[in-house]
Length: 326
Image (cartoon, rainbow, N blue to C red; front, side):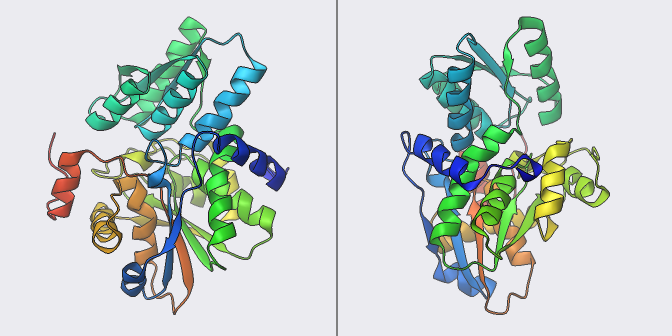
């Protein structure tokens, strides 16, 4: 399959697996957001999943494959800022597999607590996600554990089930704005758009303070760059995966960069206009949609990818004060 993306039947089979654990999440047209954007705005609510984020879909599909194809595996290890880790922790625990998850120092306290409650053994190491990832790879090599990457075809297949629900239910979207961290979510959207033969444009959105994916997209090769976002930790990618970069280069219209202040404003808009809680990374798509004016009455969509934000952080954002210092 082109660029290694899953086809429609594979995504439908993944959906059957996902729905053993969770129902479809809703998508709504929100009048107040539409007025704010000058367009008909549809939101896919992945914040309504059992772990409050879209990543659970990929974890369920990956762990199902691992249990069937490699029943000898007893321990998996991965790195995360939170939502990928919650996904792997939940899916591994349900499969009777031990999960060891590495997070950087200063990671979200509430995401850390959630991962532990889902059954993960948590290790704090490194100053950012990339450093945590490198340490997790070291543990895998030293202990013979199974490494779960942040970007993998099976993860893409799982999260593509959300895109299938969205593009099948929201009527005739002209453009969809999708946050980019390591790239599984936007790759899933591209796979579904292509499989359904739609003309919908896909626009990727990254944090301007974590621009490595946008730089790699422009260069056509991996460009590493430090991360400095204070709010969008879930998309704080320092070193993209080249496979993801290639998929996004081929399948998207363009990639936008948004400021932290725009992301915080989008979090406030989600709460004021829909009464949904969005974490920083979950609001990146809306920030890009609102930046990308004018829409001229178009029908546009975005993904509210997660709502896992620490209470103190969200309180400060709602107050317009930005993120408190740790």
